[in-house]
Image (cartoon, rainbow, N blue to C red):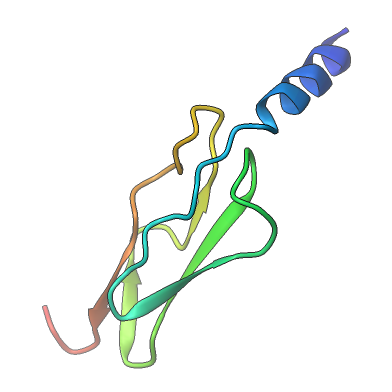
Length: 78
């Protein structure tokens, strides 16, 4: 069944580790669980900065973090 295939693939890829994601200037990255498949890295900017890009990245089955690393830009600058 589809559910059995999905469960097996999630179990298989659960051993995939993306490692710690890139840090960003003027911000931080938080890992709440692990750096393995389907876990999330969440970025935030320091006070006085705004984020460009996605604030979350998900560990993919390829062992790479999805999406690009976001960046923090000082408020009031172009």
